[in-house]
Image 1: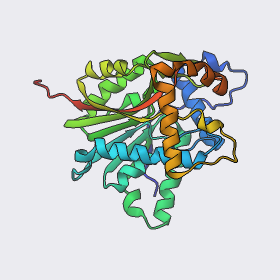
Image 2: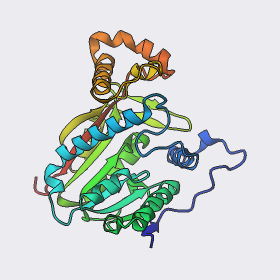
Image 3: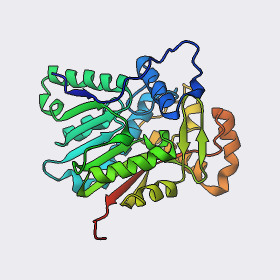
Image 4: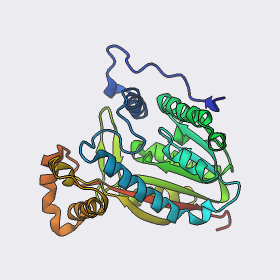
Amino acid sequence: MRRTENTAPTVPPNNVSGLDETALPEAERSRRFWDAQVRDRRYTSLDGPGMLLFDDRLVALRRGREETTIQYLLDDVLRKTSLRVLDAGCGTGRWSFWFARHGAQVTAIDFSQEMIDRCCERQQGLWESGESGTANLITFRQQNAWQVDDDGEFDLIFCGGVLQCLDDIHVSEFAQRASRALQPDGVVLTRDSVLCRRFDQDGDYPVHYRRAAEYESAFSANGLTKVQDVGAWIHPQFITKLPGWFPLSGRPLAFAVDVDGWLLTHAPLRWLLPLYQRLTGRGIGAVPDHRFFLYRRRSQDA
């Protein structure tokens, strides 16, 4: 009963002996990285590796804040009947299932077959547990986010945490394809990590922390106007270094996360960044701001 399509070209296995991974195209290195995360069970539907302390509590707090933000940004859209959603870069399906539970007909794509297989396992679990109403609303298929080819099909395209993993050419291609795939009054909602000064990370996990203006420019050039952008989350750095015998939860944890983010983002306190780098071993020089960006398709005669 699985509803899945495989439209992506065949790719070589991840463990090609003697292959120099850094010589591979960036998109292929990224796909292999995420395949490995799922295969080795290091990937959650939200954060991936790296959260060592307060894992469950921080994940729950971030999930709640992101859901509240999406509900706010898409209040009118989610009220539509027969809502059609494309989840571009669906990962293990967190948002695909969330939109389906809100009554949307969802097409979910990801360039990682490992991710799609995990989505199908979750979908099968819904069928077996009697939640066929939700499961039947989702179709999964392996496809690159920047190769969407469904013209005029969707009311909403959601792309969460994907564009930062694409190079500039693929971001532009995604914006172009997304504009064509939308209904005339459709919207695109993205969530990506941005910095005030761009930082590009190479290697096995290539990622691009762009300025917000770069995304706005790429989408505007393809007929999509930014309507709103909202900060969703600044990943805490200092409270995760607290000893295990000093737990936080509930409102104290939420307050500590907010203070942590404020300390790391306000200009008068940027002297903390070298300390941040020593604690985390990262050389970005700043803390990425995870933001939601809402774009609306411009009318042809605008």
